[in-house]
Length: 343
Image (cartoon, rainbow, N blue to C red; front, side):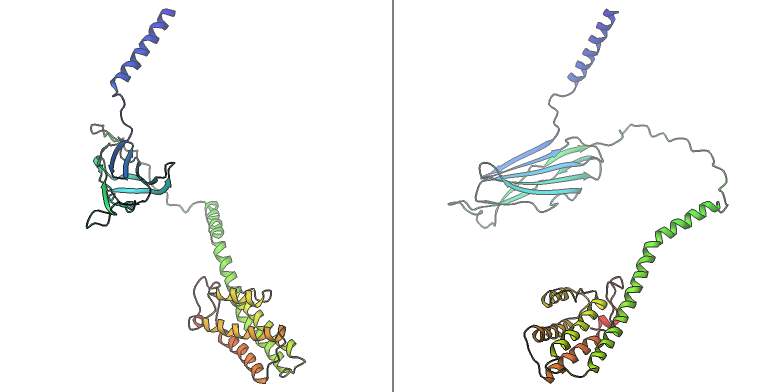
């Protein structure tokens, strides 16, 4: 029994040894080309060396240059049009000796099997070292061409592989013509309702927003009429009048355009207003002057004359009237209303 086991182990060892001897020693896993010119060395590596169709090839272009040498790497995809570019990653760093190490890594996929090649890639550089010529006479830069890397892309199936087809499946019988069970219809209807629910919710919310924006004018107009019914303010009522007038306009802006106006300072609001896509530039300028005037009255003790008070009232009324038919673009899903387009 022990002798049989010993002979079996020897046979397996000899079989493995014969297979290892039949493979070429040091078979390359990658193709590599290297070229140098003056202060620049270029290395091009392709892996794997023997791909099959469907494999992704890794191509790495590495350029080392001395200090004060400006390197111009190839443009993205230059000379690689016959391959599909799956990924691209450029990088650059300095090594321990102060040389610049520039890399371009491609992941490529061949479109067909058979003989393929990576054509020469062009690297340019300008020599800015003291006492050196920047470029050859009459040229903008020095040029280096990499070696052409030739590879064989194998097929998934060998050329002599059998292509026997499976036998066709037997006849499955006549197709059912029934409408299905009520449970199936019920589940299908429930699935449709679930899928349509988000869209219905958004449409309902948009409708609410439109109704709220249309009523914003009516609320602001009523409040302004009530304020003006008390007559023009005298010096004692000037602060309270401008506080109420600016509050009417700010509340209207919040309801109509969604701007958080009442709780912001004037400067914060003007910044927020400048980013709004719903306010025309003319309206922004009108509001800027109106709010600035109101702040001067409320905080700086300004006492405007009757003409200035009338201008402030006219600015508020003009802004309400010119934007009463305007609806926020957000409420319409990005489409502008007719009044907004004409603003």
